[in-house]
Image (cartoon, rainbow, N blue to C red; front, side, top):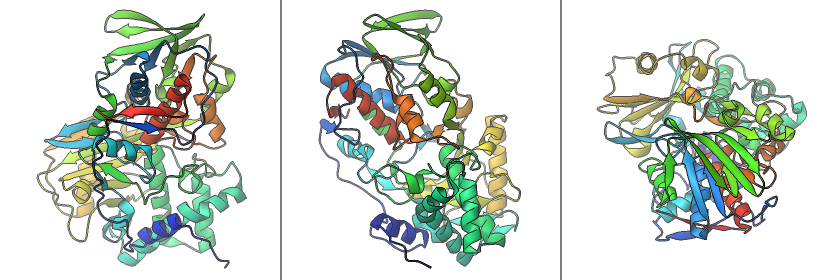
Length: 502
């Protein structure tokens, strides 16, 4: 076999997969920085072009991460603007709630790749501490339960499983993607990897489950449809570093959302239905309760999720350019659903067991990953994740039915009677009219150019932001934030913008 050149990032990842202690392991508690404002760019010092006219009054559609970031920058630049949000709350797909008195994220949870990440910088600025939420660092004590075998996977098999899965994700997948071409899926790549490594039997099932699980609960899309060439683990265009999933903001995303919103005013309950281009500006139409509204502005920044654009819930006059329409239709938008449960005590968590990986008995990927917030944050909360086809199947069930199914699985996994939770919440992002899914995904034959096409301004007046417009960081909260910075740079014609915290 030939030698493999490993970067510092590769060494850290593979060491974590093998359960080896690394210098970055353990909780992160950065010093809070007293900085009311700070300068941010979107990863480069370029000033985006394509703008017509000066920003006299900007209408921002959506108060998720992208919209709040645009508004923050415009507020600091003294530009008149208004933010319209269809929900009765701000945050978009960041949905921090309180369950049984404990803050829990029902939407985005991590800051992925936290080193060099603008979201980490903003957290420091806002005084929001972060804790290490990397599941891989707990590999030796993860409870890996195989329903087909009816037992936990032993330590040797588990270590080999995580080692192979991470080696494929971080090293071999890029080479295999090049060999197989743009029509290859993540499933195709994983199977080729297992063939070449001579992995068979139960170990193969376990490796494929881990690769599939971390694909489908990340992008909410069947791994047979995810593009191997654009799979972010090995082929990401981002320069941010970190081990595994990244950091979790202490106290949920609530502090970050509030800090970005600051003193800005958001008009809640405003459902935008139409964006019209007029001479010298735009007209935005919609409803607020039983009343219709019409707002005129010089520019509009549309930050609605890709699922909303796919569904045609916002009409554009004149219609969007063909390239943008095709990119919207072509890019995937997956479903990731959670069942978050607060218990009286963390009965599943001890010195030898923490997060749960579940290998289903059949071909479906049922409840593949369970996040142990007792391990991460010291609270008795367990969050079960589902993504892709199985998450869509769960969409037909009520919240109570989802809880019952979750508890049945958990009872089988721990092998004894379990209590009912003190409080719980089951998400349903795929049926949420303001998201219609969870995150964008690079499906077969899609490329980063499609994301660029979605991001492109229309006739210099209609701008677009959101995680699905971020080529380097699609499907992440920081990608949405960076896209908001990008569009603020475009409007202000500056290489960087000023953001305030609180």
